[in-house]
Structures are given as C-alpha cells and as structure tokens.
Amino acid sequence: MRLFFALLFNDKIKDELCSVMKKMEPCCEKGRFTFRENLHLTLVFLGEISPVLLPRVQEAMDAVTEKPFSLQIGGLGCFQQRGGGLYWAGVEHTAPLDRVYRTLADRMHEAGILQEVRAYRPHLTLVRQAILKADCDRRAFTVPAMKMEVDSIHLMRSDRMAGHPVYTTVAVKKLGGGIIQ
Image (tube, rainbow, N blue to C red; front, side, top):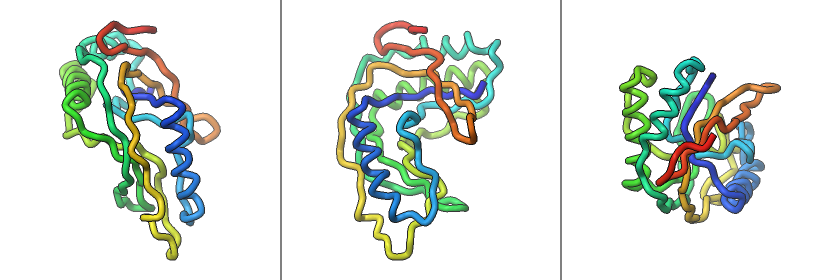
C-alpha cells in the first residue's frame, strides 16, 4: 500500500482552490492539475508500506496529542522542476502543525518506515509540470487568504486508476481524541 498522512479540506476551501486552478488553466501550455477530490495537505509521505506495518502506522497517528488548531492558507508559489513548475498554495507554518508533523515523522523514523526526517515545508499542490504561456503573467492569479480549523489527521492510501491518483481514507485521528476507523 502506498500511504501518506494528510489534512483534508472542507468544500468551501476546495471550491476556492478549484476556482484558482480554473483561472490558471488558460495560462498553461501544459500541466497536471490536482483533482478536486485529491486536494489535501501532505503531512508525511510514507510510500509503499506492507499491510503488516499498518498497526505501527496507526500507533504513530495515535501518538499525536495536539488539540484542534487553526491554519491559514493563501498565496501562490512555485517550485521550478525539470519538466515544468509545481505551483502550490501557501500554508502557514505554525507550531501546532509542526508538532503534528514532528510526532508522525519521528514515530515513523523510529519504526524504520521513514529513512530520514526532513524540515517540513507545508504547501498544497495545485498543478504539476506546468509550463506557462509566454504572454501569461502568474501574478494574475493568487490563492486568497483562507482559514481552516484542523480537527483531524487522515491516513490516506494512494492508488492509480485509469492513469490518475485516487486517494482513499484508511484511518482518521481526531485531534484531542483517538483513531476512528
């Protein structure tokens, strides 16, 4: 199973993000836009995990003791990569978000599932391998400031179907509570 920990968004935030992507589309010669149902904030990417390790992964989720917190989303950035840019919405790097990341990453590292723990750079991917048209000014589109309440983390499975990623929730951890299957 290909797994990752993530924060999921409500419909209002997804609608705003999709609106931004719709404005970006005519400016792109090419690019792979994130499907609405796949919009998420990755906390820790685990990669291919044997099903026998699933209890360890869920133990890491259960070790998160953070209470619900607020998170700000907004702005637009780009990581330049070979084959085009990766455009993303900015995510406020808060102490509670960092503690959630650190708990999950450290537990997975201790279990031998993560090879290394890196500095966390929270961002929300909107489009991959984007090449903008010459006459397009990327300042014409931006992600408006939005606030979200984070009250749970999700363990997600990633599968490929018809050449596209499909994400499915495996388990949910309520912040300040236990795991809900």
